[in-house]
Image: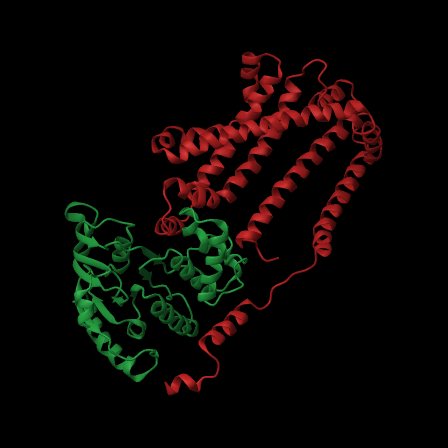
Length: 290
Length: 254
């Protein structure tokens, strides 16, 4: 007991002291400087691309009516942003994208859950799903048009086929990579089969599932653009249809302007997925130090 | 000590064997191990690599089935801690501790309160809203202890829980574990390959042989508590056990 009293401070104090030492040194740069830190490289990149574009136009390799310069293009784009037609086209495209992607997520979830749980389904369909993923979506269109005609359904069919395999694969990979230790911990804590799914396997597969969603969206967006170029439905303006018409009319500023709109939408949605991913990583402590 | 003999053990293993694989190529991991732990007793299982200590805990925890023999834990609720904290990274510290209560359908309010209490017990009061990755290794292991305690178990299985910690943290956690064990009257089955740790903590040290795992010898530890890992008495007994352990390991070199 003499040794006990020789040390000042109880065990609790010593433990608290160690804890405090271990946790020292957190905190990072503020929000504003973080946002600026991300924005300025992007702005610089955009600026460089615009300069390069203008230089190509100035080189005179293509006449101005084939390759419009940035200034003409942005004037045209600005004018379009003021028309109702543009917003109708945008609305049609986005409606198709959102419903197609939502259906793909639903189907991907059901297929992914079934395949990851049932061994025989996995043996049968596991590699088929991956195979589907590598199939270029545009190769589906002749078949889709044969089945559904030049309709909305043909487009949706291909969008779903493009996106669902990625979503399913993301979920399957997530379930597969659930750390066995967490499963053991769950079992020791008294979790039943369903509770294990709800409380351990699904949350553990979230990062992989999110990656699958992101990839699925990219496939859906590509398939949709291909579809809108191939399946032109009368009286239904869409972004893809505008591309098509601009090419027919040799309307270079209109063509490039529409492409910019498509690119921007892609980037914005990718940013949404990325911020979801960053939030997840922060919560899990997986974020790379910057 | 006579008391321990008359009362029913918290856990009893009778001739427990475990074979991995089948037929002549099967690996005998545990060979007719018999062992009992009395309620409130602290038993340390000690052995070199391949003695099947972790296998034994998995069997008691019900994570795996024995090939032969019987494991009885009459009416005992069993909790387990691993070498890694094995916390769920998507949950807060408090939600991790609450998990066992949550699946049993305990109401949210009560869960919160109990978790806060348990975190206080492992000296982590006020850390409930943190995420596991924000804590140090020793703190995470204490959260894991609180999560195990939340099961209201009578038997706590510990699989080298302090193996990955630095010496100073480990010493402090020994003191904490001893205090919690006494306060709650838990029966503890503690696996380690660290002889001094076994002597520091155990009422009894059970030495296992390797490949296959068999009980070689039991050493009662009758030193007064609290003990210090660096005290002469602990060192003397640890040296005796170490010699026996080395003999056992040397058999495999011949």
